[in-house]
Image 1 (cartoon, helix red, strand yellow):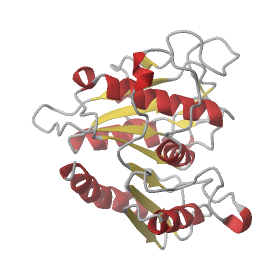
Image 2 (cartoon, rainbow, N blue to C red):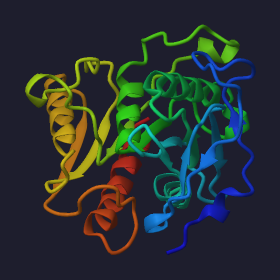
Image 3 (cartoon, rainbow, N blue to C red):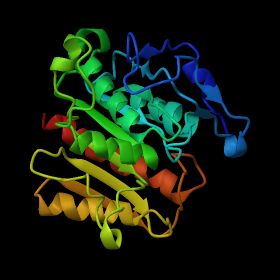
Length: 273
């Protein structure tokens, strides 16, 4: 399996916070790569200086849309190649500019939401720099990264930090969201939708994918139901098998299936913008 770690080596991180990182007490430093490389997964932790890496499609394929990619890892680590660089490679082949988000971990859910909101604003405020139309910027995530993507999509009106610069005057609402084997969306009573996720008509369209044998798959079900009830466009796919944490790697039926479905959905989404 090619890890595509080298895919990221020529990318210069775009740091989100020019000065003090809001809510962060530890000084800025590079993320720490854990010694665990099982399943050919590169795991980053101890992120104190959040950033994103930019991956651009060829000029011939560029469709003018962008997607922020949020790797999973239980809000403890970031599976940065499996659910970051490899996803960015797939997105650029579809014509999207991809932004792999290194959000704060471990155990910094509120900081992670600040990072996602700030990243959306920076990209949207600089359309010429990144080649992304302000109304065609989405977010996607995997497992905990899907939780973060859902929170960013639904809680865009929540002021999580004090404005830093002019970028913070633009909207942090993504135009669409893809949640791939999402987790932590059913923390309400009797496994209902997590209380903070109050879906309404302003919630952007979503694509959800999970498998029945994934212990977290109820997250996709309750989110889809809430979106449907709010009359927000939603597409839900549930396969019988596949488990959790497969990314888009070959050899797993779920990992081989969702990209084909997501590609069709994404084309329809941006064609309607």
